[in-house]
Image 1 (spheres, rainbow, N blue to C red):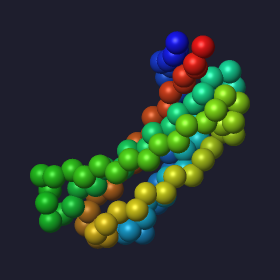
Image 2 (image 1 turned 90 degrees about the vertical axis):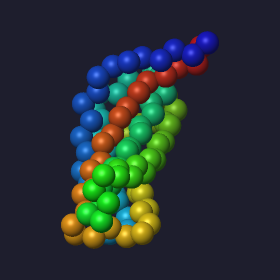
Image 3 (image 1 turned 30 degrees about the vertical axis):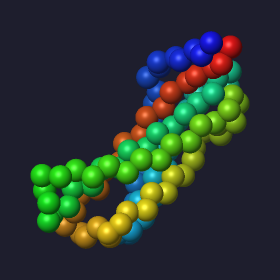
Length: 100
């Protein structure tokens, strides 16, 4: 049986972009070591050339119980490259789970 805990976590996100790579650093304090912990990063991109279209790029990582060290870095490659006029926004989500 799987147990999923919905708990609002205090996630901190720092993002940088060089046009082809978005780097996000996710920090979450107070994560219980008793449960597996999953982080999902969603990078949305709105290009100036197509303002009605939002592209999404996702990356996720699951940490076994007790292995989350408080922060991790995620890299997302974007093709074609973004321009300075494009809008890149990153969001991070976290969840607990336990198989019992």
